[in-house]
Length: 92
Image (cartoon, rainbow, N blue to C red; front, side):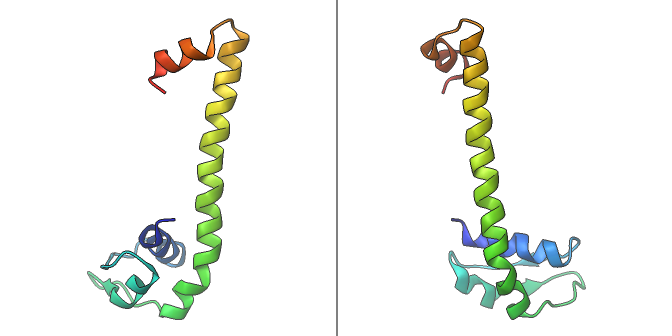
């Protein structure tokens, strides 16, 4: 799971117009957040409290993409295309 993306999304849930920068590759990146262009600071605890919800949403989005792909594959196969043909057509 991309922790930086989860932190960024949590910030955007709190303040959709927030402009921030941060560094790092894990949850400790929350300690490096710089609120830019007059964006009011958001307490670290408030951001961290949203991380589990945001990560669940990210997992659900990833699963939805997989489900959509599989549904499309099934529909194309129902039209008579083989799985190999579909994979070749869409470079899967």
